[in-house]
Image (cartoon, rainbow, N blue to C red):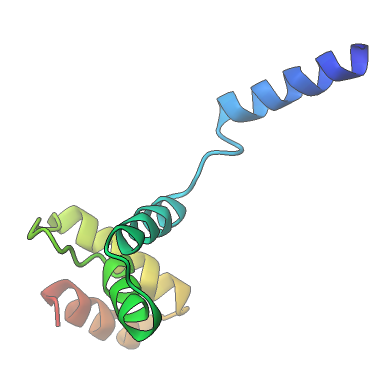
Length: 98
């Protein structure tokens, strides 16, 4: 009995402190997956939609804020381990939307 209470308390603490909280990319993946499911997409169409959705493009015409674009581009450059002039060139291109 004490073990079950201890496990419950530990899970509550972990949840409250955000250990199990979803990251922004996980939330984006989840929402894009739901949207693709609503549109009944499969195969190449789903793959293309997911790529577009995960990159931040929206179907509803909503505009991505400059701050969000900066975060997305920065995360992508960091993921590709870019540094120096290559990173500058990538960021310039990414932030311009090209």
